[in-house]
Image 1 (cartoon, rainbow, N blue to C red):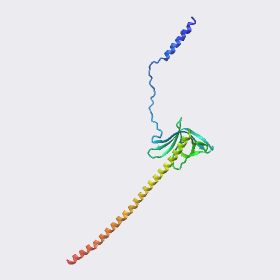
Image 2 (image 1 turned 135 degrees about the horizontal axis):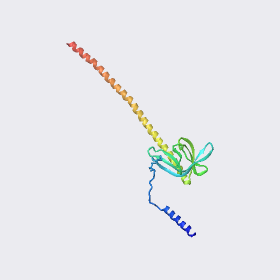
Image 3 (image 1 turned 180 degrees about the horizontal axis):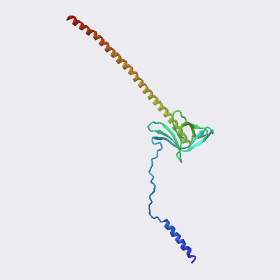
Image 4 (image 1 turned 90 degrees about the horizontal axis):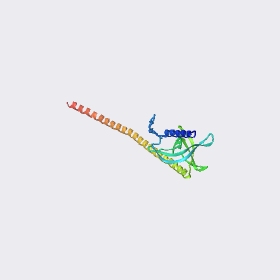
Length: 221
């Protein structure tokens, strides 16, 4: 009898466990409903010219050494309306911004002396919410990606130079046109004044003749 009792208890435990695992089919509605929220990245009005994975470093002047800024994706984004191009890099896991600055004509990118897969450049960066002069170094997984980055970066900088020259030329043309219009206005006013003077002189010349005719009429009378 003593050996049968443990088996009986073991069966009861299995049955109880099976009852717990059974699906009752009941559906529990969530207490709080979460609504979908539209997330904006600030890149909606921009087109990606370049998109590569890399690791970014910044030079610490105080410590006189390179410090890792983050590993992720570096992009060159061209604005659809203004045509300006900026460099944007985010960390792959946290999406935190590592670098965020415009590519301007005065920028030049150069190969890093210690690593052929790396290149360096200076920029006024806005990643931390304020403009800072930074000296960046970016390292790619392959030499090909590094060359692609450097070539595209340089092409963008040169294109921005041409764009600024065109803007300056159009501004100069507009200024010249404005000056020419302003120059015409005084001339037109002077011509109007001369015409008015001529008319006044004609009127003055006509008045004496009228007085003479009146005198002749009185004399004949």
